[in-house]
Length: 265
Ligand SMILES: [Zn+2]
Image 1 (tube, helix red, strand yellow):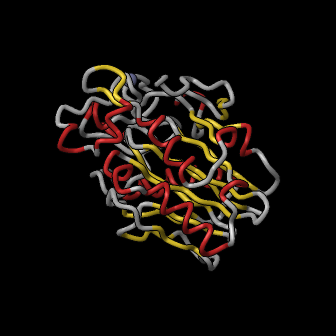
Image 2: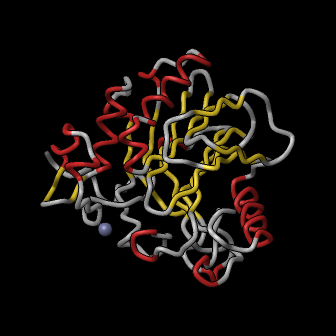
């Protein structure tokens, strides 16, 4: 099986890639550029955090100063034109939060790894090597976002997220667009204990001894959930190789990047 696309040209930079230029930097993908819909795969630049969290750390759970994280979240909302953000205390599971009322203020809810919504608000995933997968149903105007590290992939979080869009909003998976964020690539996704940790079907995605292509695994999981191949985009940027992103594998003590999708109109 071929490795998933690397450095997909459909993903382009928006915002500066270095701190000197100011403001958060992020990637956007063509298929999600639609009226009233905003999105961004943020890198680590353009924030206010210091030390290992330098500079756009969006996580309140990694030891960074709360004031810096709040400021970073403000900058992110400003960059996308969003008034509120819903985020999660992620646990590497497959539970989906349904946001069916417009939140009055920012909200962070523990115990979930995905969100779906038809309301005006931003949905934020926080990650350092894990995948963030954004989903959009342009017919029913429903947004989705999922956090998929290897544990989430094993737990099938992409499938439960699509299911939540179908069950709560009547989405037809064939209408859905999906995009997979920068995350740990097949170059760096080494699993020494894969025989114990990964189910047997995933062993087919071993690209060299002990290294797995989780981009391709997610693509297959999205196909199985009913998405069409042409509606799935993969950024193909490895966060451990590319120092513009926080990487847990590279640095251990580090921040979390944000991936956001939301309706603002
Ligand atoms: Zn890599």
